[in-house]
Image (cartoon, rainbow, N blue to C red; front, top):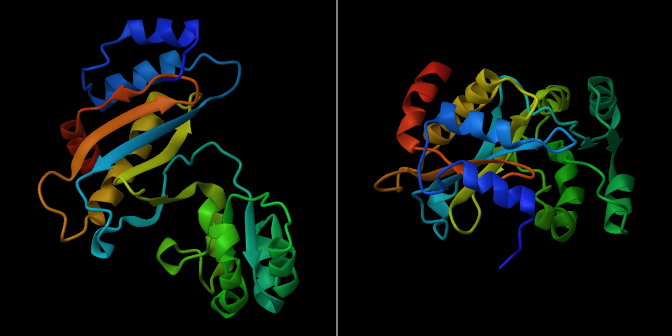
Length: 238
C-alpha cells in the first residue's frame, strides 16, 4: 500500500470519503484541496457500465471542452507538401513526413501530446504502432487524428479538444481543467464531457451506464460524485 504524506492525510479528514457529493460540492472540495505550489490539473474518472472486452462496447473519441484544459498541448503532424504547410500555419509544434516517422522509429523522443496524420501518411505512421500505441499517441480516424483537414484538427486540439478512451477496466479518465479555473468553468467542462460520453454510449451496454464518478487534483485525494447529479449538467451542455 502506498504511504501518503501528512498533507494528504490531513485533507482526507476534511470530507467523507464514502459520500458521493453533488458535482458542485465535489468541485469546490477539489479546488479547496489543490493548494500545491503549482497550478494542479483537475481530472475526472468515470467508471462506465460497459464490457471493455467486447469490441462493440469500446468507448473512444474526442470532445471539445468549452473552457479548454488549461494545458499547453504539443501537436505533431505527419503530412507532406500543402498539408504540411497548412499544419505549420495552424500552429503545429512539429511537422514532417516519412523522414519524421523514420526518426521516431529510430528512437527520437516523443516530445508531443497529440499526433495527427493525413490519410496518405498512415502507411508510414502505421509502422510506428509499437512506439506510439502504448503511449496512446497513434493517430486514429475515430479520434479525429487521421484527417485531411489538418489545420482544423491542430487548432481544435490546441484549443482544448481532448481524446478519451476506456481502459481495460471500463474507466475513462481525462483532465477537465486546472485548479485556477472558476468552479463554473469546471462544471461546464464536466457537463460537456458527460454529455459526450452519454452520446457515444454503446447500444450493447446494459443497465446503469455511469456507475461511479470521482474528481481529483494532481496532488489531492479523489472526491466521489453522485452520477445522478450529472443530469442537469448534461442538459445544459446540449
